[in-house]
Length: 414
DNA sequence: ATAGGGTTAG
Image (cartoon, rainbow, N blue to C red; front, top):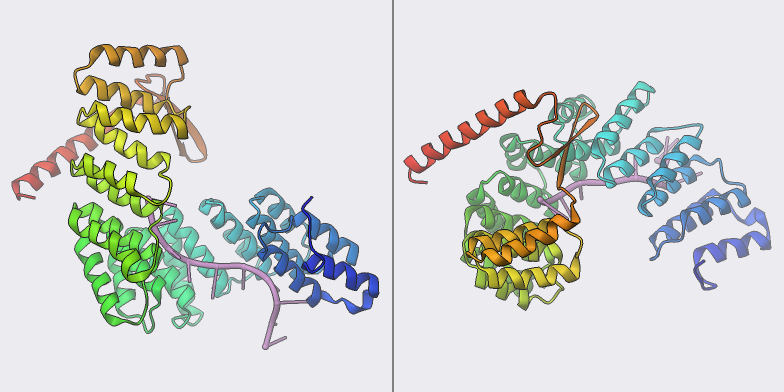
């Protein structure tokens, strides 16, 4: 149980209640609930839930809806779902709260399932519901559903002035692979905010269109209408990373804090470390990690370890491995990388030592994939799956195709 | 008119 002060919204509410229940109405309770959710750490939604019962507001649908998002924000999806089940008169807002909960818990397919259930229940989506459904489409790559929502919105009036909706639409097309339509929406936009620019820059970057992304970022700065934020710089650095533009990436990383007062986060450093490593600049990557103001995480060190093992730099690999043992000692993949590093450097005895330790652990790495809601698992050199012949055939043709396109690219001098 | 539900990274 947390300690709370006399002035926190819950205590105030209880005080008012004791003074005379008639002084409290639904609005008062709702305001208090919202304040509770905003404090950090947020008040446990179960306490709020109990209080609603005590004050006699437990069946007010607006309050129940607020509790759905409160449970969701406290990482309690099961209780959010249960809360939804308790609502007897569901409207578009309560459905939307649940859809949003699934989106925020990285379950876009479940979000879309609920979106369809809502319509089967004869509840018409409004533009907020459509906006959240679009972000679910973007996250799961559900382009056809996204296009359906676009058509639906056009019939319902377009919502072109709603930047929330417009940005979600533009982002959906970009994430689902249709950068052309995304750019068409961008060029035709009546208004643009940071999110519009950022979604478009990231969209280009994700699809390897580094030049378009960087040109757009220049244009954004020249227009002076919006100020880039941390996410914008993730897009810019991703673009540099895909195009191998080392100098440009370093310049933008410095410009972030110098010109915009944005302290680079781990994801920004991650982009640049990855780029330096893939360009073979391992010493520079290491120096950047050591110079960071924030504590490097396992992903960053693992990037360096992978590069060091690929190039047989066993000294640097050891350095990365040491940090990884502190951060994530149980991660078996790092042993594999380390043994590869020794092998690449010709240090066979050291390689054998690592291998032997791995054998003692005996935990084979396992990959899994979900197809039509059945999960299939594979370990290395697995021959047990009934469709292995078909799968190997597909893999062979993929490998063949990528060899072909590589030949074409090198023929063009790229 | 409408408490409550909203967009950007990997």
